[in-house]
View 1: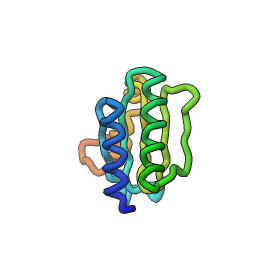
View 2 (view 1 turned 45 degrees about the vertical axis):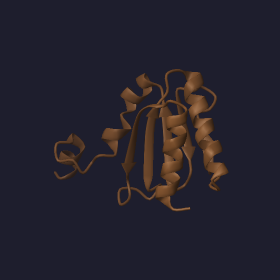
View 3 (view 1 turned 90 degrees about the vertical axis):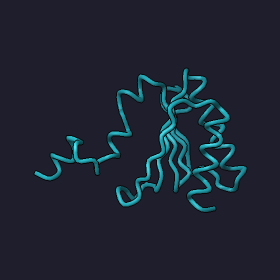
Length: 119
């Protein structure tokens, strides 16, 4: 399955589960961990876990079994590793604290991390 197809499977599962504030980050060339990161929010620990479980299930149905999942016990932050696509599902307070979107947007010139990198 192509990365874009897998991304679309993930996005459909997130939409089906009513995930909030979904952001797709293309991190090709920034890391060797994955090509695409998807960040989404759930409204409670149960919602976060259900979203992550559904993403893993739908990916497996599409022929891409997850390499692993993390955080299914607590439900504050769950991760589904689909190799080419990594999905982070977090409660809003955790998402605000880690702000992965900012972390992976180092190409933006107004990002303080980028300024430090050029010194």
